[in-house]
Length: 260
Length: 214
Image (cartoon, rainbow over all chains, first blue to last red; front, side, top):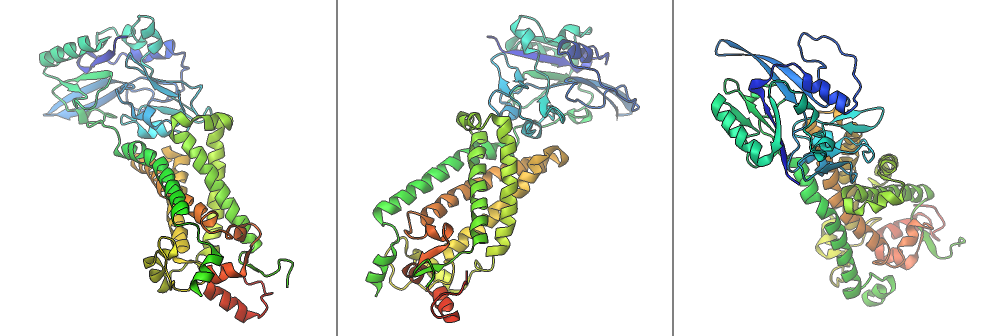
């Protein structure tokens, strides 16, 4: 199966929020009551029922006002921190097509994925004790379709295709609009990529991690302490056994005879 | 002479009950925690009714561990204060690693037992505090929550290894010891070997050894 990438060309986004609605529709996510908070951004944040969201930012740069709109959803990491942190097998899986998919049937609501995610994407439902996030519409991909958000996008801001195709398209487009590709770190591969306008920086967009990487604490936890838990227990048990057969147990009566 | 013959009472009922709540909850948390940490060992969760059930078992067992830990800290901290002779005991390997003639006489607990107590205290504080954070990780700054997950696992590396040492030295490594935590009584020669100064003290309190001094 091919590996896919969703490319988000922020320079083409008009903030219509068609992707937001299409996502809700395809994934049967109910609407939530919201409040006007002085911005077109609505709801205010991602939640259990809102897997993708257009974030609006107003940034003044070099005397010019930049009205920024950004499609925010799961980045579908090549080595997902959420799946690495997850204690329940099957609750978060990385697929060959590049998507990182949650399965509520196996989720135990521990929230370690939410803590681990470098992009702060997963959301928890308190009552259900389950997490939820964008699944890249892996069910549609398997059916030969594009994700719902991409299908709905009227401006060509969201495009979807094989990894090779999209990487090439991203470079071409970034060159044309003098933009930057995000994430830029070649050591942090994701299956969602952005083209950001060159007039503003990554840090001007709200809720965007300028330096995405696997949290160091997660690395220590899973790559070091995890193996050493069993190595320690087994090693000490082995050492105790060797002590028993070589030095022998500390017998009370033997010691008395020898000592006095 | 009591019903226990020439046996000497070294622990009272409260000590034994608290010890086994602490030990049982600790081992249960260790086993279920290993079930969470290694996906390949998820049969532990299957056996206990699935990972969701095991999550709550781990939390409630952790609560029992926390309560019994606080009680045992105040119960044993006085007996586990280090004294000047402990260094000598450690330098001679406690008589466990090579043959030693003149081991400094131990009071109630030797330097190794005291060290285990303080390692348990340090690890338990880290594990309980991080466990509390992990109970509601979204209430805390994300960096703090991330450290909690890391430290929870890190302290278990240390505590898990020392628990195995503790179990070995309390059972097979020192025949006659385990009854101290089962019936509460050990033999007089055992006391002469393992806690001679405490035994002398005890005998001086009441010759004949009837008095409950544990």
